[in-house]
Image (cartoon, rainbow, N blue to C red; front, side, top):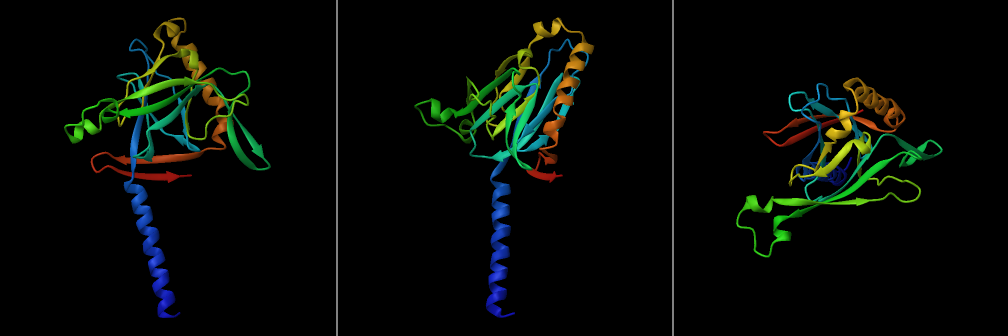
Length: 229
């Protein structure tokens, strides 16, 4: 092998390493949460999908919160958030082309856009902290006639009628989903748990077209380690 060929191979390897390092540095964690009423004695499991992956969820039994995290570019400021019980998919041969809300199933789709404080005020930010402040602008939108789900949607498998509101959040936290306490009053804990299990069972078909992502987060050092299977 000539010295020139060896040099080109080395430069190519270094370029790839630099690109990978840049992509890792340019990404951040975005936190999502589903808030259940404090009166509940048992928080049901919830399935979340994003970017072709099953997203790990954690249940905070003390505060009745289901939380999850996704890794995205820091410059990202718009997310589509979809709540529906059942997700289907369209395929060509052995290739899945896109996801759909199952025919006749209810859904709630919101386009969430983060507006930095500097974008909503005429005066310039006074500190670095001010730059990270802002609010989420939440707009309810409809799916197209074919019920196709946006490719970049965060999909929460839950009954949309049980969600009171999608609100709050900041530059690190996505708007939270708040479960309707009055609607839950009509259900026993067992009925709610059974309903959530049905959501998980109907999501099995979707599981087959989503990779499982085991994510390990080092919050202190702000690093992300992902294992996709």
